Every structure is written in structure tokens, then in C-alpha cells.
Amino acid sequence: MAMTAENLDNEEAEETGPNRRCIATGESLPIAGLVRFVVGPGNIVVPDIDGRLPGRGLWLKAERAMMEAAASKRLFAKAARKDVVVPADLADTVAALLKRRCLNHLGLAKRAGLVAAGAEKVRARIAEGRTAALVEAADGSLDERRKFVALAPGIPVVELFTGAELGAAVGRETAAVHVALAPGKLTTTLIEDAARLRGMQKT
Image 1: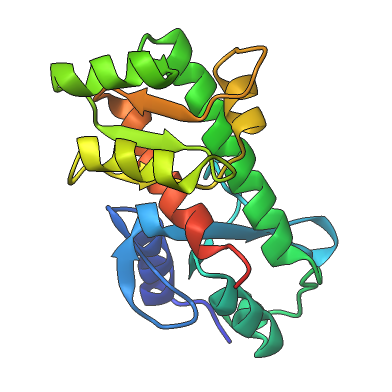
Image 2: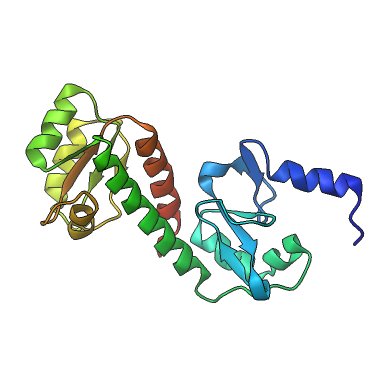
């Protein structure tokens, strides 16, 4: 298909503004709930979790079923207007990259002074009213997790990582079961990326 001035304008519009068009649903959605892909060397579809790779973005809702459907229905090829190679483990790769990104956010938040880890420190942070998110170890006691969630009603809760993963992310030598984050840009980004990661989990 010949590329007209109108086509170029439309493509440029897709890469600007707060929303992007999902190639599976056609909806214009906030970037925070989407995953960007580009066509890399060898025409291989590559996830661009950080949104920094060059090339025209191909955007999808951050849902495992959506990505599997996009691969089976050749939606990446249709959006790219050429044959592409979609790795069989694409959804798993996206999930792993999002998980690493979330844990990196936690480490950065710790260095920025936004993190309280451990039962007593988290209780104190909640009591101060400076909690914007709770991160609870997925392998921790369900009863204990419920108690902490009840202390901060309405606060976003992330339960996607093991205690060992949380401990390593916040610089502890032992597992961290309860982590609280104060308000801040890193906290907001973590909440958004955790929502994307949740959509990529296997059911």
C-alpha cells in the first residue's frame, strides 16, 4: 500500500499524546495499560517495555490472552504491514521483563526513601498516613497479609512477588513480607507496571 501524507500523519499521531491504539481491539487506551512492541532485526517482534526502542510502536493491552490472540491471528503482521516473526514465548518474555522492571522500581524507591519494609515499620508508615501502596509477599501468610491490607483500606495492593524477591529488591538479606511505599512518581509507576504484570499472569 502506498504511504500517503494522511497515512504518515496518522502514524505520527499514534506515537504522540497520552493514548495509543491497541492493535487487537482498535481502542485508544492510556499508555499505562499497554505494552509497546517494535519490529527488530530479522523482522522479529520485540517487546519494548521501557518505550525507548526506535521504530514504529505496535501497542497491545497488557493481557496474556490478548498477546496470544495477536500472535495467532497475525495482528502484528497486519499492523506492521509486512511479515514478521512472533516468538513463541513472547508473553512469557513480556511477563519476565515487567517483573524485573517492577522489582527495579522497588530498589529505586528504597534509595529515594519511599520504602518501609518489615511489619513494624509498615504499621508505623500506615499510621502516619503516608502510604500510597502496599506490596505483600505472595508466599507470605494469607492471614497476615489480610491484616495489613485491612489497616490501609482503599490503598493499592501488589501481591505478585515472593518474600525473597522483595527482600532482595529493597536491599535486605532476608525475605520481606510487608512493604509500604510513600507517595511519589516511582510508586505511581510501580502500581501501573504491577497492573500490567498482573494482566500477564498465567491463569
